[in-house]
Image (cartoon, rainbow, N blue to C red; front, top):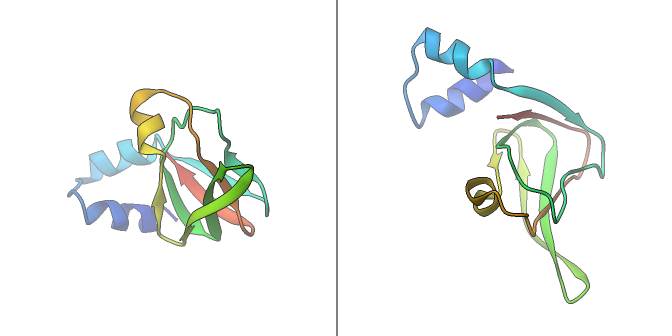
Length: 105
């Protein structure tokens, strides 16, 4: 698993071994059950997700209806940038469509 996220990170920036180790020390493994929410509207998004396996959907409520905006699968990244950067509550919901293994930063 660490190899996948490090390979993905290497497309953005080159890390030496010490930097890779430091990066992996801040990564948290999270296994989600089908239909489990990892982010719920009203929470602050204080993490970035890397999906190892499985699938997540991002949706929001509009007029009392759930609107699915996007799906994320293996080797994809997700965060609610606005909430993550500002510390404000998210309007997003992120839910596992199936059993999903994530790495959180």
